[in-house]
Structures are given as C-alpha cells and as structure tokens.
Amino acid sequence: MIAFRLGALLSVAMLLGCAPADGPKTADRSATDDTTGTHQQERRRMVRTQIAARGVTDPQVLGALRAVPRHEFVPGAPATQAYQDRPLPIGHEQTISQPYIVASMTALAQVDSTGRVLEVGTGSGYQAAVLGAIADSVYTIEIIPELARSASKRLDRLGYGNVKVKTGDGYEGWAARAPYDAIVVTAAPEQIPPPLIRQLAEGGRMVIPVGPTGGPQQLMLVKKTEDGQIEKRRISAVRFVPFLEDAQ
Ligand code: SAH
Image (cartoon, rainbow, N blue to C red):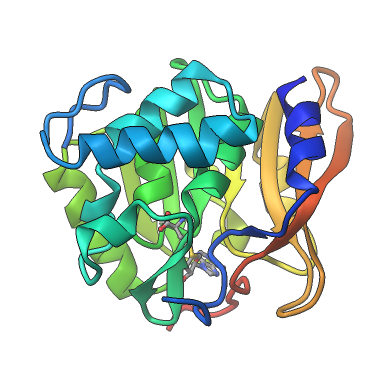
C-alpha cells in the first residue's frame, strides 16, 4: 500500500536520484540515536518538510533519515547544503541522491530489522547507511574503486558495522550473500540485470531505475512472489546516473 501511495505521489514531479551532476551542484546504527550530536535540527526539518510532507510515513524510514548524518557523506559541500532538497556531487561524476528519493526507495523496499539487503551503487555510502539503520545487514557494491574505498572507511568510522562494501560490477550482484529480502539499485541500467532477479528472495522486493542514459527512466518496483513469480510495477519518472559496465 505504501508503494501504491508513493507511486501516486511520485508521479507528480521528476525525482532526482543519483542524477547526473548538472544541477547545483556515527553513529550508532539505531534509527533513533544520533551520536554525532550535530545537525539534528537540519535533519528534523529535512524529514518534516521534504519527506513526511510528500507522503513517506514509515516511521522506520523517517527515523533512519533523522539519524544518519548526511553531511558526513558529502565532505566537499558545506554541511547545510547536505540537508537541502537536491542531489549533490560526490566526485567521479557521481552524486548522492536527493534525500526524498533515498527515503522513497527505502520505503518501497519495505526493509525491516531482520532483512538482508543488497545495494548496487554505493557512491558515498549514504543510502547504504540509511538501509543499515533499519536492516539486519546490508551488502553494497560500487564499481569505482576509490568511491568504494572511501565509502567503506566512512561507514566504519561512523559505526555502520552491519554494512559491507565491495568493489565490483553490480550487474552480477553479490551471489555469495544471496538471497536478499530487498535490493536497491541507485544507477540506471537499460534493462533489469537478470542476476539481480535471481538473487532476490521469494517475497523480496527490488527498487530499480531503468532506462537509457539521459532518456526516459522509470523507477520500477519488482517483486518476487512466494511462489517465485515476478511482478513489475512502474512507480515514477526519475533521473539517475547510468549503470557503468566496466570497473575503472
Ligand atoms: N547510493 C549512492 C549514490 C549513487 S550514485 C549514495 O547514497 O551516495 C550511483 C553510483 O552507482 C555511483 O557511485 C556509480 O559509480 C555506481 N555504479 C554505476 N554503475 C555501477 C555498476 N555497474 N556496479 C556498481 N556500481 C555502479
């Protein structure tokens, strides 16, 4: 039901995921604690005005967005920019998604405290940290080695011990840790990679932007039913960076 409601809301405006960077440019893992002790006001305001106001109601998701110190994930930008309603550059022509799309994708994935989650496209590690604040364990893959290394260090430093990062091509997923209750993909392939569908648990959900670079992309919700059937639903028009093919 959350997905349906979000779908209706999300269609109102183009969502900026890890959008191409053409625009302006801890913590305990508990979703309610903020051991950094800074920028809490900005986070509360961000959640109230950008996320709850647009219809994301899942308390776990709102709690995670209030807890994860987003400014730590965009070291090149002033802290106040980190809490604005937009994606921001994180180097290597990649971006951290707009807070609302992180919240929306997390809500669509319906992660819970027992869940095992795969993320493709670690980037700064922010989406992984949000997932890690809710789920039991998060496995995240990044194709650009420098980004994987810096995200891994950052997540360790902030205390997200349940998030594991590896460098590689997320097209293949992370078979050794499969199956996953949820898969969140934060770069847009032209087609849904079949290995990711295989690695989804029965009853699992995948949230993935699909479409050509610079062309129309759709955020899709893919469910694997308890009897292994695949159901796909279009959620909204989005704009994400392309899914890269080769490790650089
Ligand atoms: N989720 C990130 C931002 C995502 S930007 C965050 O919260 O900061 C998209 C990321 O996907 C980029 O870092 C890009 O390098 C990565 N990426 C693109 N293609 C990939 C692939 N095939 N496998 C793994 N990562 C990929």
